[in-house]
Image (cartoon, rainbow, N blue to C red):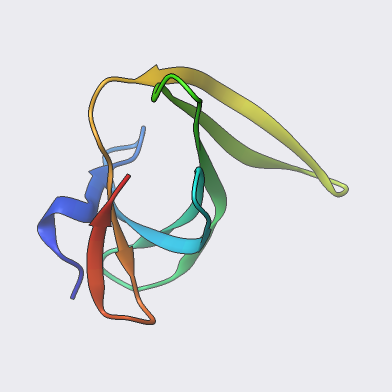
Length: 93
């Protein structure tokens, strides 16, 4: 159902697909869906491209009561493949 290059493993070892939420010239927000069920998960990631072309990755998880926590903050070395369900295509950022 989801292209192989968009699938990642969760911390618990479950297969999840990276699925586009929205994007712009220098940012992408994508969520995760369970590969087996297609269920949308509450966590999401934000990729920000800086003027020097470095890509910053923020991984966000819900904490309850409307709060969210950034649990990972890194600079990416490789591009990420993300599935655009609306256009039925994969793109890299």
